Length: 331
Image (cartoon, rainbow, N blue to C red; front, side):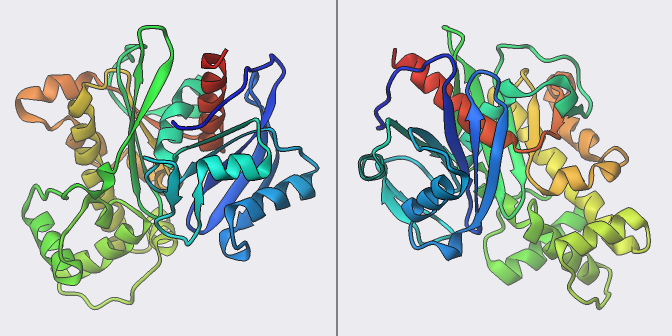
């Protein structure tokens, strides 16, 4: 990163944030215990700039801004940041200088999700198949929400960890059977190119519902992802249940591909807003079978565990971990 930092004191508290296209979630974090407090959510549309919302948080929570780090839902490759789904644009150096910050770090939201893995306790993870993790092996993280986020985490020789952000949610979606080819055609006719995110996201769940209705020759009223999930969980809508099962089957194939990319014997971790709400149906779905269905490499996939992250505000803890590590490296 291009940011400058100062050395970290043992009792340092910092302000971290998770910035999406709709909401900006801020909190204070203790960089020793990773305890969070003074959590506040702001609507991005209510503030002209990032610095405006940072100032509002500091004023309303009576928290000084010294060490600050944010995760943001867009690429972070240079000093200039341009949000993908919102109008905020800023210079990292410019914000640090104008706000008088000792430290200002910016990272991609799924880099933060990857960093959160090392802060999680066993009770904050629900294992879905596979064996035991190899602690220093590569890890993968993915999450379905408004979009499909993807990242990896590797352990360096000195024991520090480094996130590998990317745009893996925008790779091509690969159908594996006749029904999925029909879904692919339906989505292609609507949107053109069919990316994984078109299927594996909240909006993707809504599209899957319509695609499967078309496959079965049914006329249905479009439903929100939340409503589809509710109807599937209650068992009152067989099409909704089929939609969720198809979502998990495709998620399993995609997660298995991620596992093979870097031989992630450290585990594959699932974040995001969609999966935790539907976990009751995950165990009876084809998620794990599709994860392991990798032909000659099925034994590799079978050994790799998957986990659903159940911790609240894991992304904010990941931002804190990244900041803590950066400050330690500056000593």
